[in-house]
Image 1 (cartoon, rainbow, N blue to C red):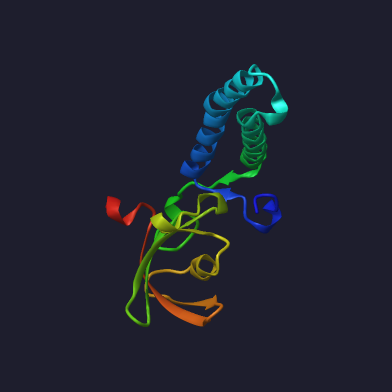
Image 2 (cartoon, rainbow, N blue to C red):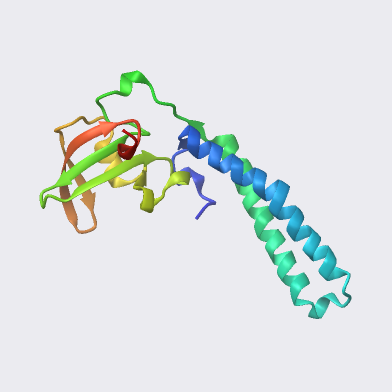
Length: 167
């Protein structure tokens, strides 16, 4: 999943990169030292072969170290895309887009990098069929999105570069 970065773009919003850096810092400065301390305390109890706390702690440390390696490599390869006034009126990376389908269903989504996908916030990846259909388009354009269930037609109602609920 996380290992094949060639299949996903390296674009990220500034907030997305800051979130990855914050996670890296927290894992390195807070979580890993806590788990290391717990493993040390469990090891001091004696026989490690039957020590569930020790084994679980070591397993958690390996998981943390994998995530630390991934985040370190990912932060070296991501490219922050900041808003530019030239983007106004067209749909590009970082845009909040409001679209409506033929049934009158309205959807609001933001085009972000693969590290920032969050369906609950309406964040979709730049690599998705929806985002690919929207890129470069403008308000009132009709876009066709290829889906497993067939082509879906959407009309762009609004494009902005800040969240709809923020103004």
